[in-house]
Image (tube, rainbow, N blue to C red; front, side, top):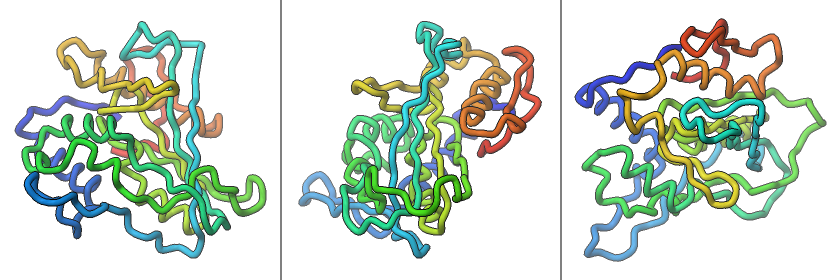
Length: 244
């Protein structure tokens, strides 16, 4: 799947649509104006399945290669969220994004209509999943769904979908493509920003982006579905699980 860099005029409708999806959770909630009182708490829709939902976060590293976008990063790092059914009735609600991720996401969108949302606004979002809750079901008995967000968007933008799938009995893995989205928080409080967005004229070719993204899901896919790139300038032979 080759990624092209569209013109700003063409990107805007796509960005608006993407942000609309990210912020759909606030559709019925009016953010207060700067002169008004504090805004209401935004929230994700309640999952429609019969199960409650748990979630946990994984930090995956591959020391055998450096990052294609940031060669100085000698280790390839990925942050992955898992959502799954749980029998837990109580627990700590998982954060939607951190305040810094919210700030960078809203700033990166470049959409004037979002300027009324406070920089940390998205971090106030109430999710439905309990952090580190005990999973339900027999070991290795649940089907797996891998969610891969579109270019520049974090895995958190798919939280509502992931929670709903988990409530219906699926294990869901949401992957952040480090340095290809507006913000990814790594262990130790490090925040990786969108190196792929910074300078399109000097970024690796689009096929390199294809290879980089294709190898991320391969860490959680069976060997038969692993995408392979013959070189940094050729398309992968397989591209399973990627969302456009």
